[in-house]
Amino acid sequence: MAARINIPPSLHIGANAIDLAGQEFKRLRRKHVLIVSDPFIVGSGLTGRVSDILSEEGITSTTFGDVQPDPTDRNVRDGLAILKENECDSLIAVGGGSSIDTAKGISVLATNSGSLFDFMGYDRIPKAGLPLIAVPTTAGTGSECTKVTVITDTDRDVKMMILDPYLLPAAALVDYKLTMSMPKSLTAHVGVDTLTHGIEAYVSKKANPMTDTIALSCITLVGLHLRNACNDPKNEIAREGMMLSASQGGMAFANSSVCLVHGMSRPIGAMFHVPHGLSNAMLLPTVTEFSILGAMPRYANVARTLGLSRGSDSDEDACGMLIEGLIALNEELEVPRISEYGISQKQFASVVEKMASDALASGSPQNNPIVPDADEIITLYLNAY
Image (cartoon, rainbow, N blue to C red; front, side):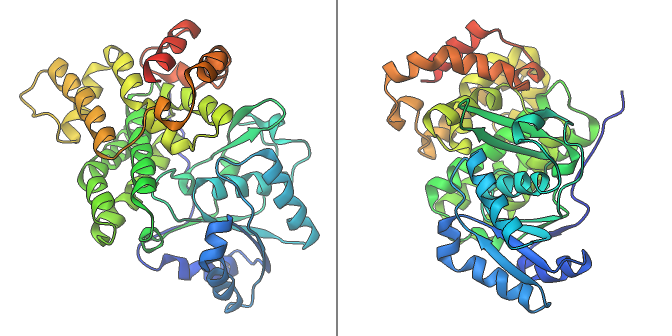
C-alpha cells in the first residue's frame, strides 16, 4: 500500500528564520494576522517582535496571548472569537506545541461549522482552514511540521487527537535561536518527547521507507545533542541539533504514526494536567520494554542509532541496552516518575480504568508493535507509576 506523505509546503530552518514571517505572509497575500501565543512568550517580548516584523511588510496583527499548557477547546473558542472580532485572515503561532495546536484549531474552525469534537480522528475536516505559519520556541513537539493537533475536550475530560492534511501549517519558521533561553527541565522533557516521536514513528505498524529515514535522523540527533543542550544551554550546535530533530520527529510521526506511549500519555495529561512532553518521557521506558518483542530488530537498531549498543551485539542484547539506556537517560535528566509529580496513588488508581479506555479509544495503541488490551494498559500505568 502506498504511503501518503504530508509536510508544510514552505520550511525555513536556521538562525533568524523568524525574520521571514512578514515575507511569507506577503507571499500568501494576507493583510491581518492573528498572533497566537501564551502569556510567557507575550511577556518575553517575542510576540511584539513578530508584530514589528509583520508591520515592516505592511501587515496588521492582533495578539491572542492566553494559550495554556496542553490547550483546551475553550482556548480555541476564545482565540476564534478574537480572530472573528478583528476580521483576521490568517494566523501565526509563536510558542510551543500548545500555541501551535491551538492555532490549528482556530484556523479550521474559522472556515468550518461544528466543533473540534466533530473532527476527532482521521481526515474528518471538510474544508481547509485559514493560512497558518508556525514558529516553534521549544525543540519538542514538532507540531510545526505535522497535520495533527491535540486539544482537550473539557466536557469529556478527553484529549482529542485530530489528524488531517488541512491542519498542516502553510509555512514553518524553525529558528533554534528562539530556544536558547529554555530552562534545563523543559529542554529535557521536550527532548525526550522528541526521542519518543522518532522511536514510535520507526516501530509503528504504519512506518514506511520515507518516515524510517527521517525518524532515524531524529533519533541520531537526539543522541548527539540532548545532553549537551540540557547541560550547556548556550551551546548553539546542540540547540540547533535539537530543533532540527524536533521538526524531523514531527514529520516522521505525522506520516507514520505514534503508538502506545502517546495513547497512554494523553489521558494522563487530560486527568492530571501533566505537560504532554513530560508524560511521554515518564512512560517511554515502561512502554518500550512491553513493546520490544513485537519489533525487536527495529528497537535494536534504535539502540545502535543512539550509540547504546554496538553492531556486534545481538538484537536481544541491544534491546536490553536500550531499556537500560532510556531509564538512565530519564534519571540523568531528572525526569520524574508519575508518583514523584504530586499524583497520589489513590488518585491515580481511581481513574486508571478510564485512562486505559481513553488510551485505546484514541487509536494510537493499535499502531504499536504489540497491541495491548485494557487490562495490559492498566498494568503498564501502574508499573510506570
